[in-house]
Length: 490
Ligand SMILES: [Zn+2]
Image 1 (cartoon, rainbow, N blue to C red):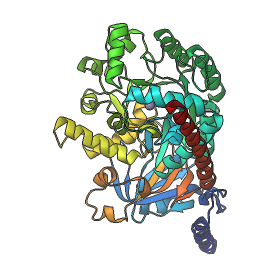
Image 2 (cartoon, rainbow, N blue to C red):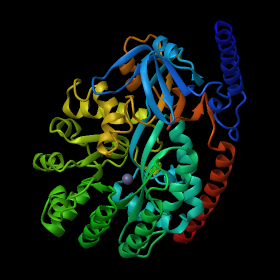
Image 3 (tube, protein in one colour):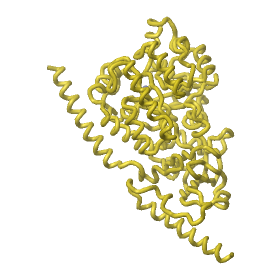
Image 4 (cartoon, rainbow, N blue to C red):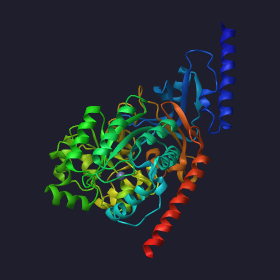
């Protein structure tokens, strides 16, 4: 009995060493390393992720020094000190924790992923000028399924690089977005965009709604990571009857809606002129909040409207970089949080950001509230980290499965390396995560227990091909834009 135990232990050690050494040679085409070692006992679990600190973002905000997370079948099955976890479980794969912080993956509550291909195409403009004179025309001209595939792959690459594990997207050809998200391993809410004007994939709001229904139908219950939803663009681009029809379609399917709301002074004036109401009041008047709603931006709600948002359980997504770049205004995030509104964070598209870095979003969200209120205590690090994780998950209706490290939740876990110069010294890990860390510090990304990236190696994306295809497509867009500019000048 004793001999068998010793032999088993030796084999385990060899297999663990093999798993660690094989991982060094992984290329994009190869499976993640934790699948390499063959279990010798049926009670082996899939993966243990360790860290000098485990920042759980659970309901008590527990931080465990020298901790570890045990993962099996895509779920978190235990959390504790590394000593406890290693004594209790044998795992096929290990991600060591030296100089690493373990935490839940980030939740990007509002994005237009494929717009990475329009990064830098038009900068330094106000929202309506930027949208109507640059973005909408460029999209009608260039956006097709190939554009969406390459742009979304580029975005997934950047999001995985930066530790985002869930994103809520709104763009055209949602089928393609969903396929890319499925393939790259991220968790996604993919919206079928509904918009009155002719768009790359529809002639009108009615047409986009018909196509949206087909998309939602096709993707419901197909992959637990991909949730098909509806994305009516805004009340200045979609008429009230179409907004109401979209709400009805979402409720029929039991899925949320994602929308831009109260983003700019233009929208306030438009709503006042056309409906004689403020923006949130308008949506409430058409029963738009009678179902899960993810409202991006929310820069201009009044105190009364903030009460409506809290009462109706609307999930608000704050996009500080986009709001600053387009000079849309400063969202009353502190007031909304105080009133009990569910507030998450998002990057918006890369054309108005110009990246998908949630770490920068956290930092700017905090700084923007401090300077707006002239109060350095406004939106502290702990509050903003919650917005990017458990709070964001709650705002989009996923708090029971992601956004925190708790037993029974999906294993969406990242490691942040705090070895680089900007982390020295480390007094407070939460402060460093919010005020210091950036995309490049993310050391590993796991979604549903599947390793997507480790130490800069990507296991689900061919990054060289994506870079090549994105550059080729951007060159075509650039020469077409140059020709168009030349002909307008002539
Ligand atoms: Zn947006």
